[in-house]
Length: 194
Length: 297
Image 1 (cartoon, rainbow over the protein chains, first blue to last red):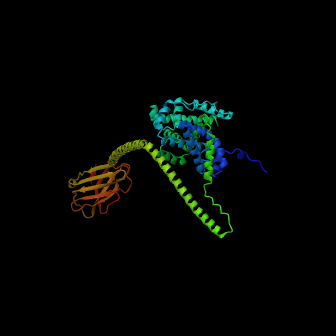
Image 2: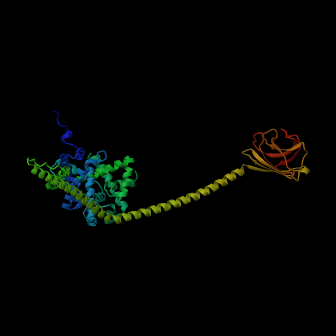
Image 3: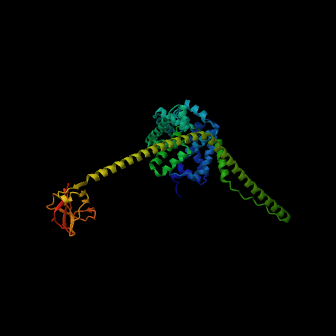
């Protein structure tokens, strides 16, 4: 009798997604337990409504169940793929409810969001705390205007056009700052969190 | 990679590009590994950023509800109805089979109807969401399309102006070139008028046009008097680098004393200093023998 391999005991996100594609319910449960906390946090930030966040979370996971066979590990990490899917669903919800205008106004006065979270709060796992602490530091190194714009776009689902309009900034400035901020964040994360 | 492309990659990672722009970028990605890497990195960065948010655990009921739905979907394939327990009575047997058949037909119809209604509901929900999305995006898209049309028109207009300007410059250059070529051609052309000291031939007109590059020329004679039947006019080129005059061929005039001949001396000419016409034996001679009646310039 052979011992189970490390992969069997602790499969990667990508392996789990591929097993979900084969309608493996247990893999789906594991994936849900891994992905749902950060994705639910993201949806609550984006939608600013507990019930909407729950609806979209459920909708998103059903989508993953149905479309897991479309996941290509050579093109994206499983969590990245899932994040993009859930964000799009949240943006669809925002748009379908015509909440853009209200959120645009709120976004202009409710910044920042990411750094507003304490790295120490609501998590028992030290490693997770360390991870969030590093992320918070990475975000802190960004110039405030770059961080704010990324938050507006990523967490509020606002388009560059509406950000430009809402904050009274030229469209080119918004695009440039988003791009510079994201690239800088990538460089920091690749260097510091790899 | 240009700043513009990096901007588009960042907006794409954020899901902010409109569908047309997103499609355009997606078409570029397979052929541009740098762009593909950038897009993937930025998407990873954003996904990682999600983990900086305060942890939020969804309600446990949601998980249970979701798993129920998953199981429902997994078992969505219709199961076969259980067979009725057999009985020894033929009447009961017929009734049982009749009921089973009716149940099967009804179940089948209900299943089909349920599937049809579910599909219709999904389509309606999808259409409704799409319609809402379209309504919200319509104005923005219209503005984008208008802006694109304006940009395209401006670009087309600029291109037309540049093309006209280039065409004009090309025409001017062509004219200049032709003029230069003409000047160059004329520069290498030499025109010589030949004069006579012999009274009999002073009425005659003799002009030589000499192309020094091609080392050939044209001789035109007019009003030349007739000469003896056993004689011919013969043209010579005087080249200072040669010890003797160079034969350029015989010239036969018509009854009016007119001739126009193209000539090429028998040897290479370095410099055509003078041209001369003499009267020689019929058919011409290799070296000048007879009297020179015309010379020039």
